[in-house]
Image (cartoon, rainbow, N blue to C red; front, side):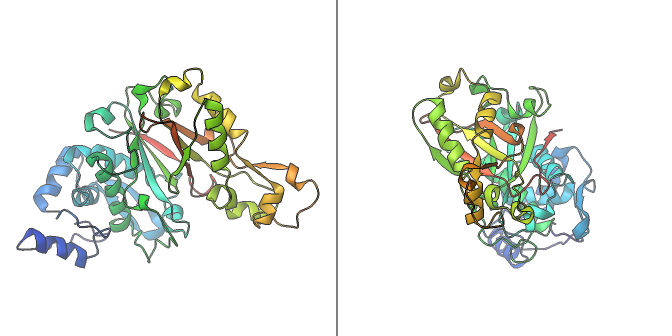
Amino acid sequence: MPDSGDTTTVQWDSALEAIERCYDLGWTDGLPVVPPTEQRVGEFIERSGRPADEVVGEIPERRREITVAKVAANSVMAGCLPEYMPVILTATEAMLDPVFNLVGPSSSMGGSAILSIVNGPICKELNINSRNNLFGPGNRANATIGRAVRLILMNACAAIPGVFDRSVIGHPGKYTYCIAEAENDTHWTPLHVERGFSADQSTVTVFAGESPRQVRAVGHPEPILHALSDVASSLGSNMSTSGSVGNTGIGVRQGQIVVTIAGNSQLWKDWTKAQIREYLHARIQRSVADLKAATVMKGDVEPGDSDTMISLIPEPDDILLIFAGGEESNMSSVIPSWGPKVGSTAVTKVIR
């Protein structure tokens, strides 16, 4: 079963009793789960095409090994279909990659969540939503794949609220946080192709992020990008107030960021992703005066500090830009990362 140690076998007489027993065992995220029967878990393992005891990844700091069986059990409880297993296994492998540094974002007080971004043909095969109500409810694949990742974090990786998960506020993405890119609805190069994979491959990119900050702007691309830059530069996010800047006192540029752009793709026909990243990178910044006033940088505000700007993103490529969301309006979103790149870096892996 989904616990982090030896397999636990539980018996029950009814579905309702099974659901309540899962609560008693601490296997839920607060919402009811699908009872992980041996038969159902076996179907998921079989669909994966991998041995039940194969180790997907590990967390040495917590002496945890995450196996295919544990991924399957938590996927069943999340309400997934067996065909979702390859996506969930890949997301699990990606977040357990040492580069991602799962212990950091999953245990910090910052309360970030693991955002899974799916690309490639599998999005259509599994009907993973990339359009209307992108981060909201209504789609089984998005809701249950993202929820499976969270249950794996809790039950297999010990990221239990109040124990190893020390989030002060958290956000709803810690229930489920999974989207796809609408790569077939735009001329832009898909995220996974930009990150070195071929268009016919399916991938999952995991990103430790805050909640989406919706950005509403009308008109041409420049006003929209101006608003996006302003929101991405706001004080109070991990991008602008992470401790690494304050500890040095000289203004260390921060980490990655996810930007989603929705609406009519024709509005952006003269823009490439590279041009948008360059535009945003040059404008996502704060003055030394602002950073000192927020005690992000050390020292008193001095003459000239208001005119000295500090970039909050290391390089343009640290902006993960995707075309996703409804077509009805030119809405966008900004998702700041958990912290500096040295804290957690987005990881993309191919779905087997």
